[in-house]
Amino acid sequence: MKARLDSQVDQLYYSMSCGSTHGEVFQLSWQEVYQNIEQLYLDIARGKVNAEELNEDFVNSYVNRLSKAFQSSVKSNFTTPSYGEPNYEFIRQVRTNLFQFAGAKTYRELKALNNLFMKKGKVVPFSEFQRNVELYRSKVQGVQEIYRKSWLQAEYNHAIRTAQSAERWQEAEELRDIYPNLQYLATMDTRVRDEHRKLHKVIRPIDDPFWDKFTPPNGWNCRCRVESTRQQPTTGAPEIKTPVMFQNNPAKTGVVFPEKHPFYPKQKDLRERVNARSDEFALSIYKDQQRKVYNGYSDSLDYTRERFDSSTGGYLIRHRNSGKLSAVERSMIDELVAQGDGVIVKARTEDPFTSNPDIQIRGTSFEMKDSVGSATSIRDRIVKASSQGKFVVIRVPNTSNLENGIQMAVNKIDDSNSLSGVLVLSGGKRFMIDRQHLYREGGVKEMIKKQSS
Image (cartoon, rainbow, N blue to C red; front, side):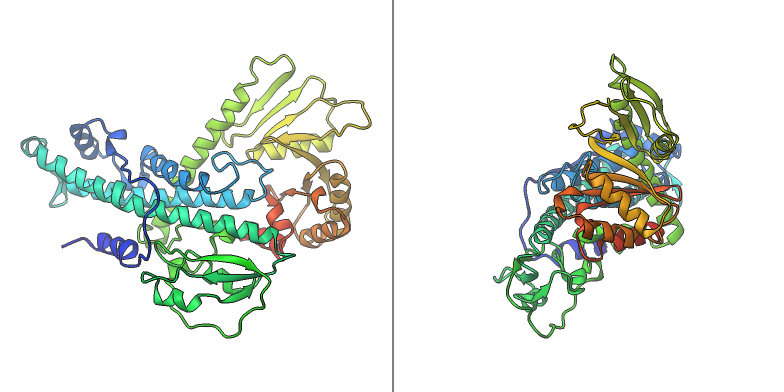
């Protein structure tokens, strides 16, 4: 009889499928981490394979595989996104979600591997392991077959469809002034689910809460999609049952695998520990990337490496002709570095017709503005910054007037191409309001709310 988890995942992945698979059939090997079965046994016997501590190589292998689904489907740089990406926040949220999902899956996989070598609550003696080494090898390969081939293929398919859906949503956002509504379209063949057949040709405004619950994919291997349209919204709403796991608009939330997935531990404290450990692995990769950029300036004659924050990955690099920083500029840069941003202060020019961006972060040039926090102060500083560049870092004492101030600035700026992103510094935190949220109704409010939750 299958274990309960196996049954839950199999039912989720296969009994709710209405489509074919995507791309290659592949298999990740546990031998990427363990060179031989004996080493795996010894690490388990010595307590080195601890499910709650996870395994960084296991987690990264899953993230790398699932990330390929997004890199092949979205136009942006998914692996190392720049603040300049129009959907930066979506990419950031997805990467966080993939790491946490990979952590939850690794937790289950390591527990399964541990259990293979246990008898009556204890690890089997080494002599018994040696006598039955081929049996144990076969058992380990069985875990590998399930976690790293069969289930991973289904997860990859789901990631592909989620990425495609998010890309269509972003295109719909860009066309909303011309096509204000969305139409749900199911693949009307013999494999379509009855619930999805009922949703076929339902039309709702793009801002309708309907899409927070019914944006495809609405099930495993769901082939439904949405399309922009000028047709009038339909009346009435079909009564359908959608699994809780799929009641989500991934383009808005960045959630690919919700915490309702069976891999996530049900105990809150354990789930939080697994998520925190996964976040540590993500931060480790980020810091490595940041350090490579920082070290890349080691032989530069024009730039000076001033400091690297080993706890966050933030750094400061200055051009020898960058000019003197004001006290306000210096303090804002210090905050950005402390929050993990790599800041490059470029050379200044005396040419009045050449823009002099204050700083560069992740390949994106920013103007820095400090505000007293009133709505008009926020508006005026963003408007002024937009005349100098498309991206602005604004520091505010709190976010109480931020939404109003940014909205006033967006309304006052005539050319929508003049403002592409606002990086907010407030209360020891920083968060990006990208173009997608700046020009979406309720988008700025949504971002501010996320930071306070």
